[in-house]
Length: 268
Image (cartoon, rainbow, N blue to C red; front, top):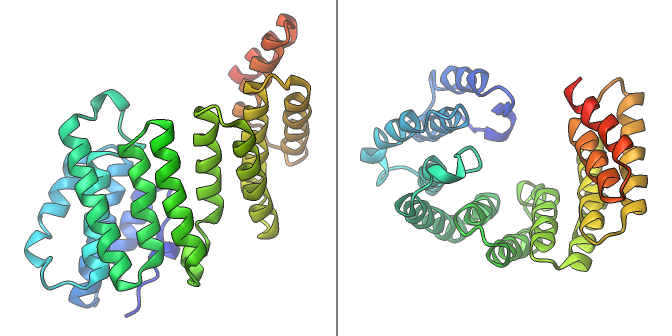
């Protein structure tokens, strides 16, 4: 069978995703079963059970030499993620963990590039920002991933554009390169708007306002956050990140009373 891993994932519900992957293993080829098991390992990592993720991946090592390049790449990617990922508490990641993740991610990127698996190459390069987390290092890895996306004609690779530009804009802000941050975040906003991704477009605007706050352009940032607040309200939703940022902005402008209003809204 031909696997569509992306459509099988529900990242908000790793347990349900595990059930989907296990069901798909019924009648699957050896190679597809191998790939599905790497994704089951990932569901454990997303549930913070890194020991079980590693155990699952270890059980696959005997088949690495026989599996496809995609299987090898996905195994390396998940081995890296099991040691260093956004799900890990920062203080729990050791130097040895980072080195293991570095080796795995670079191996995944190399195999993926050679096999023409552009989206997986991008994923591996993007994971290097978790290993080399200094802002300038994040910029370098994000730029490499973005370059891989731009030279690809594969739809799965092109889908990375929004995430990569968001991450690059974030890294530029951390490095104090604010104008470059705004440029990337506007490209991120345009990408999501062009693809009808309302939530992604809102995140890009939130990130833009966050950069503007660091630049001291408080009123522009307030205007964006209040617009987002109204849009979420119109949808019958709230976003605590918007409230958090409005509290920080009012505090920065010296309006403690309004800051406290949004402090309370975060709690409700």
